[in-house]
Length: 141
Image 1 (cartoon, rainbow, N blue to C red):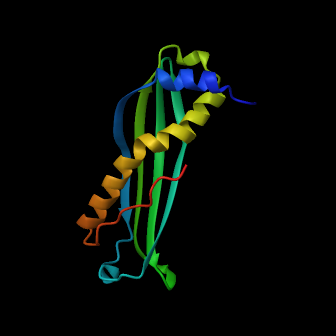
Image 2 (cartoon, rainbow, N blue to C red):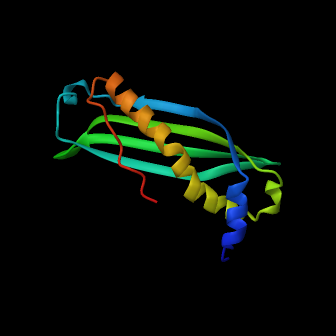
């Protein structure tokens, strides 16, 4: 299915963000021995494909996984952070848009909306774990 640019613009034009809340957060495998190491690789994953439509409300779940490992030994984990944000949007007559437009919105616009919040959370958490402040890569859509 080919998406109409005009229809997509109409969806985006009238959509509002009501809330951005942490839905879940888990920090695991914190390795105190690697805190001073400067040879750590960061692997980040992001997924915003899960959403719920309820009338004029759209909830999108933005899932992140950050895994820090020793550069020369990927089996040696420094820490892992898994978290999910729930972004709540409203749009009058949301139901008139085909689900393909909603999926495209979740893939295209949600990352732009959530990235600053994720960057702040990750940098704050790594500092609190005793690691140098971690700043994730810029958003590349």
